Image 1: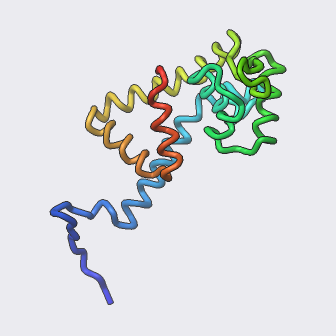
Image 2: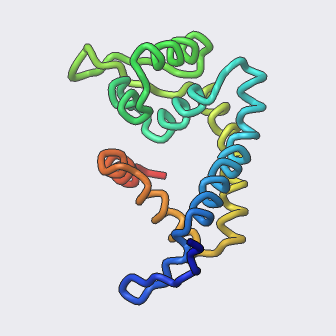
Image 3: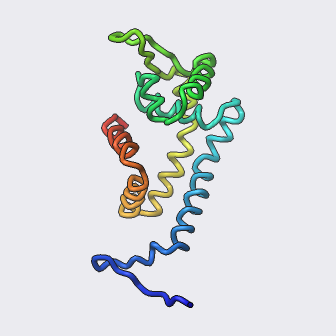
Length: 170
């Protein structure tokens, strides 16, 4: 039985954007956008024998200097073993310092060295330029809608974690 195209409404809103084809195109757009977003840093990382996990660690340590290893584990959502490999490399290469906690000596607080900050800046410059150009082209309403869609895709715990990070200095 052939279905005819009908406009469904919910509280007066057109829901044609929820068709399987539109959702598939949105998924594909995310895949291609992510590929473009990571392309420049990937080239830099490959030359240093690092991967995206190294980049994410550098990003979040830069974002929150003094972040504990436990907090970074929580933010990245990786295993302790996986993070330990990444941190060991970054520390051995002089990009990250691990300092003993003042209140709790069992805690390790992470800080970027000057070398680590320079690499993080290099990795994020191209991404910021790409985001800036896209934001400028899309306009403020689209940017707000984009962020709203991204936050709506997060599960409640992840969204709470992300929202708590918005309070950090940018």
